[in-house]
Every structure is written in structure tokens, then in C-alpha cells.
Image (cartoon, rainbow, N blue to C red):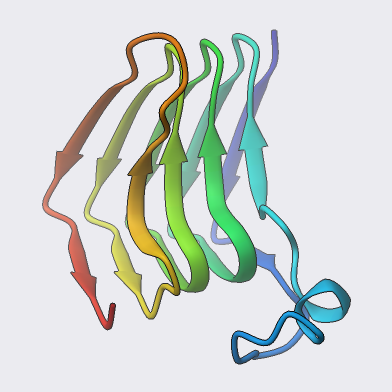
Amino acid sequence: EGELTMERCSLGGSDRRTYDMSIDPKRCASNALEAYGTSWVYMRRCLVEDTIGPGVAFTDESHGLVSLCLFTRCAIGMSFDHNCEVTVRGCSIADTFECALWCMPGVGEATVSLEGNTVDGL
């Protein structure tokens, strides 16, 4: 349905946070970006930080190419659900609260390709 191209962007909350539910709703985004329907998302060299949900969530039949991005201080780095098709290449995921990558238990078959990524600080 739509296409989004992002390069050298910053997404997420407005301030560094610790995982405190009384603070999170005021300073953090739930998701920095959510792709759904048949949308295409291209992200390159972006910073995604300070979310209380996934930094980026792909669902439905969305498609994505995420490359050379940094995800930090997100509850979940990226989530994948339903019939999405996503390639994640050369990204760093650090200091997540819950997990770096999450294939959600939705109905369907997500296809995720991971190439040369780094995960640390879990």
C-alpha cells in the first residue's frame, strides 16, 4: 500500500531511560515504527532508541530492508509477525530489555533474513 524510505534518521523516545513503567509512557514511544498491510520499509543508517515495545514491528504482508542501523534501549529490537518478509543486514542491537529479535506467534509465516548483525548487552 505504501513505501517509506529512511536514511540517517533517529526514532524513538525523547530521553534516555531506565526500564521504569511510571516513566516510560511519558518519555518513550511504544513502537518507533510499525509496518503493516502490504507496505515496504527501507531503513539505512538509522538510530532507533528508547521504546517500550519493538523498535520496529513488521506485521501483515509488509516488506522491509533494514541495513546498518543501531537499535538501543528498546524493549524489543525488532518484531516480525504474520506474512512479513524482512532482511536485516549489518545492524547492531544493544541493551534491549526483553529480546533483540522476536518472531511473534501470529498466524502465518514470517520470512526473516539476518545477515552480519551484532547483538549484545542483553
